[in-house]
Length: 236
Image (cartoon, rainbow, N blue to C red; front, side, top):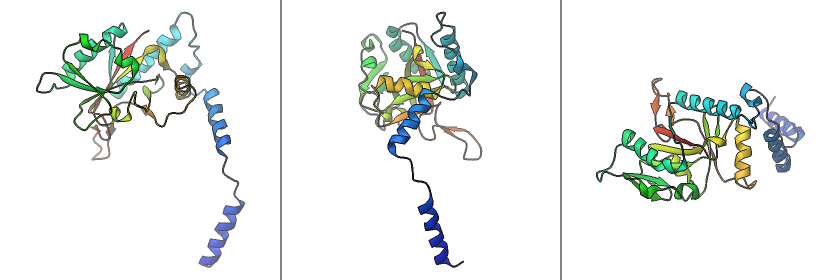
């Protein structure tokens, strides 16, 4: 077959191929998947409305175990008011301070984070806005945590800029234990509920610190983002 005939044959096949699904059809397929996710993990059958709270404790335990497997640090606090002090203690023990003896952390305009009692904690300097090249520590708030894989779900915006999870070498994420769910589909439901059904411009699914094994088969941390990820867990 000549080159020209091969091209004509491909054109005919392309014309005979079924049309691509419309945007409406795609949106309906996504909504159906989120509403009726496949049951491929045993813990997904747990009823999180269990009055004894056993189901949620199971999810939290699984989530923490997955974080440990990924090499992420877990910081547990008993109340919201304890978050700044716990964060300061973690930074002092794990992240080098600057020459002034203060560790600068960068965070966005998230209302929950802004309302924390930062002024009562010494050793931290708070900077607002998107991360800059010189920032060492970024602090974000996650909408949900996925117990199945230890994944954090964050959305873009001025409240929690995407750069906080990419430029600084240490990324600290604050998450309420009640926001830990079993699967990605449930995390997406949580996100849509938090945003009033609006899809954010960017959704980040973070599973541990950035790493690669491409060079000589040796794991290198911080390949495309932070070298260290810590999760602050608090209960309402």
